[in-house]
Length: 222
Ligand code: DX5
Ligand code: ZN
Image (cartoon, rainbow, N blue to C red; front, top):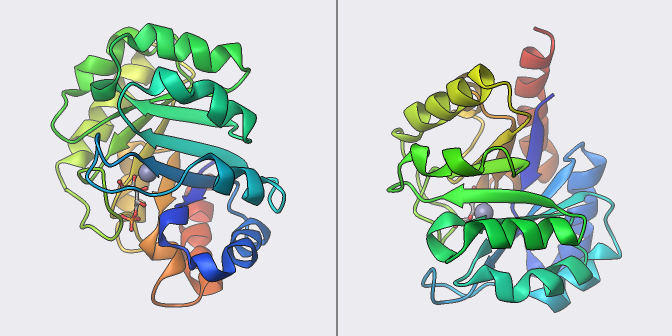
Protein backbone atom coordinates (compact mmCIF):
# COMPACT_ATOMS: atom_id res chain seq x y z
CA UNK A 1 0.00 0.00 0.00
CA UNK A 2 1.33 3.38 -0.99
CA UNK A 3 0.98 6.44 1.18
CA UNK A 4 0.70 10.12 0.32
CA UNK A 5 2.27 12.58 2.73
CA UNK A 6 1.25 16.13 1.80
CA UNK A 7 3.96 18.58 2.87
CA UNK A 8 2.55 21.36 4.99
CA UNK A 9 5.19 23.81 3.83
CA UNK A 10 3.26 24.41 0.59
CA UNK A 11 -0.13 24.94 2.27
CA UNK A 12 -1.96 28.25 2.61
CA UNK A 13 -1.29 29.08 6.26
CA UNK A 14 -4.24 31.44 6.46
CA UNK A 15 -6.57 28.44 6.09
CA UNK A 16 -4.31 25.71 7.37
CA UNK A 17 -6.82 23.71 9.39
CA UNK A 18 -9.24 23.58 6.48
CA UNK A 19 -6.57 22.42 4.05
CA UNK A 20 -5.25 19.74 6.40
CA UNK A 21 -8.75 18.33 6.90
CA UNK A 22 -9.25 18.28 3.16
CA UNK A 23 -6.09 16.22 2.61
CA UNK A 24 -7.19 13.78 5.29
CA UNK A 25 -10.68 13.40 3.85
CA UNK A 26 -9.22 12.74 0.40
CA UNK A 27 -7.14 9.83 1.68
CA UNK A 28 -3.74 11.25 2.60
CA UNK A 29 -2.81 9.07 5.56
CA UNK A 30 0.27 11.08 6.53
CA UNK A 31 0.93 14.78 7.02
CA UNK A 32 4.56 15.72 6.34
CA UNK A 33 5.76 18.48 8.63
CA UNK A 34 9.07 20.16 7.72
CA UNK A 35 10.92 21.75 10.61
CA UNK A 36 13.85 23.97 9.56
CA UNK A 37 16.24 25.78 11.87
CA UNK A 38 18.07 28.23 9.59
CA UNK A 39 21.34 26.40 10.36
CA UNK A 40 21.12 22.89 8.92
CA UNK A 41 19.22 24.48 6.04
CA UNK A 42 19.08 28.19 5.17
CA UNK A 43 15.38 28.58 5.82
CA UNK A 44 13.29 28.70 9.00
CA UNK A 45 9.82 27.15 8.91
CA UNK A 46 7.81 26.46 12.07
CA UNK A 47 7.98 24.49 15.28
CA UNK A 48 6.16 22.99 18.22
CA UNK A 49 3.29 25.47 18.76
CA UNK A 50 2.06 25.06 15.20
CA UNK A 51 2.19 21.27 15.39
CA UNK A 52 0.36 21.32 18.71
CA UNK A 53 -2.50 23.35 17.31
CA UNK A 54 -2.93 21.35 14.09
CA UNK A 55 -2.91 18.14 16.13
CA UNK A 56 -6.42 19.20 17.20
CA UNK A 57 -7.79 19.08 13.65
CA UNK A 58 -6.19 15.95 12.21
CA UNK A 59 -5.91 12.23 12.93
CA UNK A 60 -3.28 11.75 10.23
CA UNK A 61 0.11 10.27 11.01
CA UNK A 62 2.25 13.31 11.81
CA UNK A 63 5.45 12.69 9.91
CA UNK A 64 7.87 15.27 11.30
CA UNK A 65 10.94 15.89 9.15
CA UNK A 66 13.59 17.61 11.24
CA UNK A 67 16.05 19.66 9.22
CA UNK A 68 17.86 20.88 12.30
CA UNK A 69 21.34 20.46 13.76
CA UNK A 70 21.82 18.22 16.77
CA UNK A 71 18.25 16.84 16.65
CA UNK A 72 18.50 14.92 19.93
CA UNK A 73 17.90 18.22 21.78
CA UNK A 74 14.31 18.43 20.54
CA UNK A 75 12.97 14.88 20.32
CA UNK A 76 11.04 15.21 23.59
CA UNK A 77 9.40 18.49 22.50
CA UNK A 78 8.27 17.11 19.16
CA UNK A 79 6.99 13.94 20.81
CA UNK A 80 4.97 16.01 23.26
CA UNK A 81 3.41 18.28 20.67
CA UNK A 82 1.96 15.41 18.68
CA UNK A 83 4.48 13.80 16.33
CA UNK A 84 3.81 10.16 15.41
CA UNK A 85 7.11 9.71 13.65
CA UNK A 86 10.30 11.76 13.67
CA UNK A 87 12.80 11.71 10.83
CA UNK A 88 16.16 13.38 11.30
CA UNK A 89 19.20 13.83 9.08
CA UNK A 90 22.16 11.51 9.27
CA UNK A 91 24.33 14.51 8.40
CA UNK A 92 23.02 16.50 11.39
CA UNK A 93 23.49 14.00 14.21
CA UNK A 94 26.64 13.28 16.16
CA UNK A 95 25.36 9.99 17.55
CA UNK A 96 22.77 8.54 15.17
CA UNK A 97 22.00 5.52 17.38
CA UNK A 98 21.30 7.76 20.36
CA UNK A 99 18.78 9.83 18.38
CA UNK A 100 16.99 6.71 17.14
CA UNK A 101 16.84 5.33 20.70
CA UNK A 102 15.47 8.62 22.00
CA UNK A 103 12.69 8.65 19.37
CA UNK A 104 11.77 5.07 20.32
CA UNK A 105 11.79 5.96 24.03
CA UNK A 106 8.77 8.15 23.32
CA UNK A 107 7.05 5.35 21.43
CA UNK A 108 7.39 7.06 18.04
CA UNK A 109 8.51 5.71 14.68
CA UNK A 110 12.06 6.67 13.77
CA UNK A 111 13.14 7.79 10.32
CA UNK A 112 16.61 8.57 9.04
CA UNK A 113 17.11 10.92 6.11
CA UNK A 114 19.96 11.49 3.68
CA UNK A 115 20.66 14.47 1.43
CA UNK A 116 21.35 13.88 -2.29
CA UNK A 117 25.14 13.92 -1.77
CA UNK A 118 25.27 11.29 1.00
CA UNK A 119 25.93 7.72 -0.18
CA UNK A 120 23.02 5.32 0.32
CA UNK A 121 25.37 2.86 2.08
CA UNK A 122 25.64 5.33 4.95
CA UNK A 123 22.19 4.26 6.22
CA UNK A 124 22.86 0.49 6.07
CA UNK A 125 24.18 0.24 9.66
CA UNK A 126 20.89 1.65 10.97
CA UNK A 127 18.38 -0.30 8.91
CA UNK A 128 17.81 -2.82 11.66
CA UNK A 129 16.79 -0.01 14.03
CA UNK A 130 14.65 2.46 12.06
CA UNK A 131 11.14 2.18 10.62
CA UNK A 132 11.80 4.42 7.64
CA UNK A 133 14.50 5.89 5.42
CA UNK A 134 13.80 9.24 3.78
CA UNK A 135 15.68 9.79 0.53
CA UNK A 136 15.80 13.46 -0.37
CA UNK A 137 15.32 14.03 -4.08
CA UNK A 138 16.20 17.74 -3.78
CA UNK A 139 18.64 19.61 -1.54
CA UNK A 140 16.63 20.09 1.65
CA UNK A 141 15.55 23.61 2.53
CA UNK A 142 12.83 24.72 0.16
CA UNK A 143 9.66 23.45 -1.46
CA UNK A 144 8.99 23.72 -5.18
CA UNK A 145 12.35 22.44 -6.46
CA UNK A 146 12.79 20.02 -9.38
CA UNK A 147 13.17 16.29 -8.66
CA UNK A 148 16.78 15.17 -9.13
CA UNK A 149 16.75 12.13 -11.46
CA UNK A 150 19.81 10.67 -9.68
CA UNK A 151 17.38 9.80 -6.91
CA UNK A 152 15.93 6.91 -8.93
CA UNK A 153 19.11 4.84 -8.69
CA UNK A 154 19.40 5.66 -5.00
CA UNK A 155 15.85 4.48 -4.33
CA UNK A 156 16.44 1.28 -6.37
CA UNK A 157 19.67 0.55 -4.54
CA UNK A 158 18.02 0.90 -1.14
CA UNK A 159 14.92 -1.07 -2.18
CA UNK A 160 17.13 -3.93 -3.36
CA UNK A 161 19.15 -3.99 -0.13
CA UNK A 162 16.05 -3.84 2.09
CA UNK A 163 14.31 -6.60 0.13
CA UNK A 164 17.38 -8.85 -0.01
CA UNK A 165 17.79 -8.56 3.74
CA UNK A 166 14.02 -8.86 4.37
CA UNK A 167 13.92 -5.74 6.50
CA UNK A 168 10.59 -4.13 7.42
CA UNK A 169 11.80 -0.61 6.59
CA UNK A 170 9.72 1.82 4.54
CA UNK A 171 11.21 4.12 1.91
CA UNK A 172 9.97 7.70 1.73
CA UNK A 173 10.93 10.14 -1.02
CA UNK A 174 10.76 13.92 -0.64
CA UNK A 175 11.28 16.76 -3.09
CA UNK A 176 9.82 17.46 -6.52
CA UNK A 177 7.36 14.57 -6.42
CA UNK A 178 4.31 15.13 -8.63
CA UNK A 179 1.75 13.46 -10.83
CA UNK A 180 4.18 13.26 -13.76
CA UNK A 181 6.89 11.29 -11.96
CA UNK A 182 4.95 9.50 -9.21
CA UNK A 183 4.74 6.24 -11.19
CA UNK A 184 8.48 6.16 -11.83
CA UNK A 185 9.11 6.93 -8.17
CA UNK A 186 6.85 4.04 -7.09
CA UNK A 187 8.43 1.68 -9.60
CA UNK A 188 11.86 2.51 -8.21
CA UNK A 189 10.66 1.19 -4.85
CA UNK A 190 9.12 4.01 -2.83
CA UNK A 191 6.40 3.36 -0.23
CA UNK A 192 5.64 6.91 0.92
CA UNK A 193 5.51 9.93 -1.39
CA UNK A 194 5.91 13.39 0.10
CA UNK A 195 4.41 16.14 -2.04
CA UNK A 196 4.11 19.83 -1.25
CA UNK A 197 3.58 21.92 -4.38
CA UNK A 198 1.92 19.02 -6.22
CA UNK A 199 -0.78 18.84 -3.52
CA UNK A 200 -1.35 22.45 -2.53
CA UNK A 201 -0.52 24.49 -5.66
CA UNK A 202 -1.87 24.86 -9.21
CA UNK A 203 -5.09 22.85 -9.37
CA UNK A 204 -7.42 22.18 -6.46
CA UNK A 205 -6.29 19.97 -3.59
CA UNK A 206 -9.03 17.55 -4.60
CA UNK A 207 -7.83 17.20 -8.20
CA UNK A 208 -4.21 17.04 -7.09
CA UNK A 209 -4.72 14.30 -4.52
CA UNK A 210 -6.96 12.33 -6.89
CA UNK A 211 -4.08 12.12 -9.37
CA UNK A 212 -1.88 10.54 -6.71
CA UNK A 213 -4.61 8.15 -5.56
CA UNK A 214 -5.21 6.99 -9.13
CA UNK A 215 -1.54 6.19 -9.53
CA UNK A 216 -1.42 4.38 -6.17
CA UNK A 217 -4.45 2.27 -7.10
CA UNK A 218 -2.81 1.09 -10.31
CA UNK A 219 0.07 -0.35 -8.30
CA UNK A 220 -2.03 -1.57 -5.38
CA UNK A 221 -3.90 -3.88 -7.80
CA UNK A 222 -0.70 -5.73 -8.70
C1 DX5 B 1 12.24 20.31 1.38
C2 DX5 B 1 11.19 19.65 2.22
C3 DX5 B 1 10.08 19.10 1.44
C4 DX5 B 1 9.28 20.09 0.62
C5 DX5 B 1 8.72 19.37 -0.57
O1 DX5 B 1 13.35 20.55 2.14
O2 DX5 B 1 11.75 18.59 2.96
O3 DX5 B 1 9.22 18.30 2.24
O4 DX5 B 1 8.25 20.70 1.33
O5 DX5 B 1 8.12 20.26 -1.42
P1 DX5 B 1 7.83 19.96 -2.96
O6 DX5 B 1 6.97 18.74 -3.00
O7 DX5 B 1 7.18 21.19 -3.43
O8 DX5 B 1 9.18 19.69 -3.61
ZN1 ZN C 1 10.39 17.20 4.01
